[in-house]
Length: 226
Image (cartoon, rainbow, N blue to C red; front, top):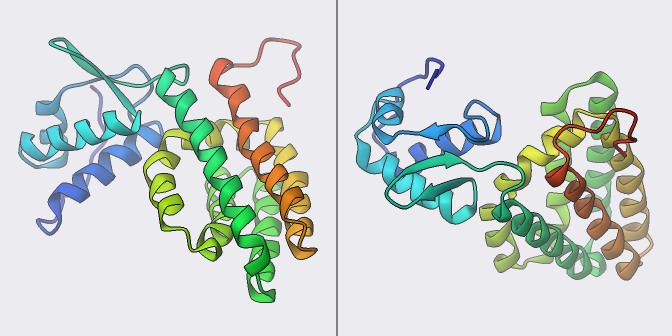
């Protein structure tokens, strides 16, 4: 594997640090889909022993970010992997549930935060800044998750959101990402009006839009990616 230089990890919470570093490397494409992962090489890259690397790979497999063939090898999951399909469905359902539960509880401060995040998202897309778009998108959808107070939803999203993050990067880096701007505006409008069912439907549609990218990493020439 051709790996970039990394700063040494601290000893505090080493297991979590290793998991976070490897998860981020998969999500941001440093470790591309299909890359074979060797625990000894990864341990040397991170400056740790092989034990926390092996533990991290097991947890990444549970989340669907890597795939292990017994007795053979561990590789980064492709975007067509069944685990990605399942994670995308779960994330969509959890966000829709959070919006339904949060809608009656959202106050003016919450709505203002959602509007600001939606504006930042639109501006980031216009500037071609995928990282800023991802951050704004996280803030927007994070408001209902927080307001719902549903800890089970938050826990499930923490585990499975990284699996679909690669799909978000593809969507926000393409023309298809512009469709999310209108969906965000609709979501905020429905939440502000207290229309929980409508807000839930829009949120579900927003996350289901990522499903298009699971089977089409590269749009067919002449085909509309939206």
